[in-house]
Structure formats: structure tokens, C-alpha cells
Amino acid sequence: SLQMRTTHKVSVWPVGLVGGRRYERPLVENGKVVGWYTGWRADRPFAIDMAGFAVSLQVILSNPKAVFKRRGSQPGMQESDFLKQITTVEELEPKANNCTKVLVWHTRTEKVDLGNEPKYQLDTVKIEV
Ligand SMILES: *[C@@H]1O[C@H](CO)[C@@H](O)[C@H](O)[C@H]1NC(C)=O
Image (cartoon, rainbow, N blue to C red; front, side, top):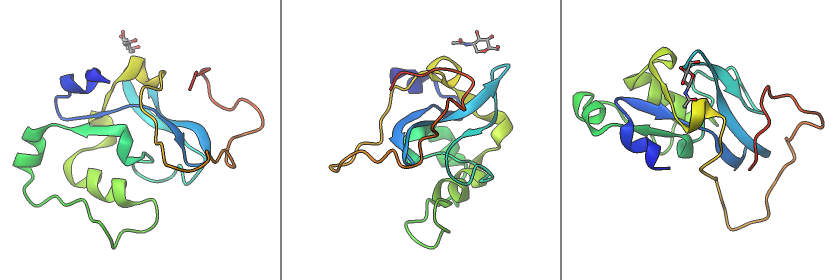
């Protein structure tokens, strides 16, 4: 989505076909991220796939020591380990209509796994993927 062009610091949005679900997304209230819709470890500080955020170059340049580790993070913690070095949940900028639209998919060259998809609607919004 071109909405990522308007990122001031760090922006976030839903990602389709990830984590064994149709989608995962940041939960947004009053324009702010307040939690995460995910099938797995929602207690992670930033329970988001690496396809679900953008960081402005200014933030990267002003945090020269911030690293996105290729290894050494706990499973699923790569994004949190990185993002906590440069931002807070409170200052995340929700894109994609307050994170109610899937405009990005975590595609792989393999069959889609929906093994973690809830049997009943758990999210507060209905999202087309
Ligand atoms: C997102 O939510 C805020 C606060 O409720 C609202 O002011 C804003 O218009 C919403 N943005 C979009 C794109 O829906």
C-alpha cells in the first residue's frame, strides 16, 4: 500500500495469510494501537509480522545502533526485538483504515496454512482477505 509513504516514524497495518490465520492485525482504538489480533503469543510487545510495518529512514538514521537480528531472537520475537529499540506501541501509526483492511499478504510458495484460524468470529471487524 502506498499509505506507507506517509509514515512519520513507524507505521503498521494488517497482514493477510500469516500465522496460520486469514490475517493478523494491530487492534486500533481512537487512532492508536492498543493490542494485536493474532493466533499466537499476543503478549509479544509487537505481535506483528515483518511484512506489517514500515520505518522511516529518519528513524533508522537516528538509531544507528538498532539492529534487526537475523538470528538470536526467540521464535516470533524478531520484530519485537527490533521495534522496541526504535519505538513504542503508543507511537505506532496505524495505516489501512485504522488497520481494518488487508492490503499486504505474507505469501509463500506453499499451500496456505489456516490451522490457527478461529472457528468462530473473534475479531471485532469483518475483514476481506
Ligand atoms: C481512524 O480513527 C480515528 C479515531 O477514531 C479517526 O479520527 C480517523 O478518521 C480514522 N481514520 C480512518 C482512515 O478511518
